[in-house]
Length: 299
Ligand SMILES: [Zn+2]
Image (cartoon, rainbow, N blue to C red; front, top):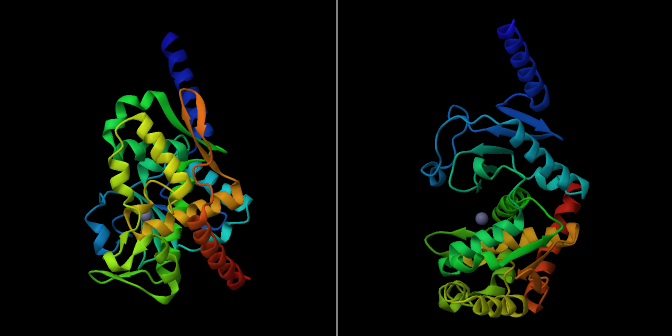
């Protein structure tokens, strides 16, 4: 009798588990947008990316499906569904990072990042500590605070779409070195110096690496807010990263009223780190103009 009861209760809990969570899936459509788990028989990323991915089949867990649907909802609610149509599809893959396969117009999302628990402000802290390991010992004293709380997955999706826009619309091009194009020159000239082999004009990453203390961090962030042309800590990694991040934060600011503050010992000591200064205003106007044209074409 006891054994029977045990089996019955096991059956019951399995049923509850399955009905509550659904099954793992290879792929799904949501609001007409296609998401697929990576399948080596089906997906052949361009050679530049092939070496970085793990070529194993990925199935999507109910939790991952929910996270992706939530991001679709967040975009649709703000009239941004057309952005999701930019890629041919989204593929969830085991890889060290997400990437846009530009020639194929496919966005590959790093499986580990497909969740709703890691937020954009968590990502800021992570990137800061990765760029400057010395700050790790003080990390308990400060954090970034984004309002509203948004999943970093949403930022990644917009960022990768930004790369496709950059590729298709702005013709960013490298043939051993950066090739300027009339469509991107206006944007690129804001932060990058053609006379110095297209280095960034701010020495951004050096400033970031050289922070020695929390006081130094605060001074850096003050400078970032007032003087930097970049929108995030990873913008200076390259012109295309600069564009993708400007694209992200233009959208988050315009449609979500997103702001990010710096909190030290429980108090906001610096608000709105991405406040529009004279350089950022130029970038925002550039992205706004680009999206305006995009919307016209979609009508
Ligand atoms: Zn990128």
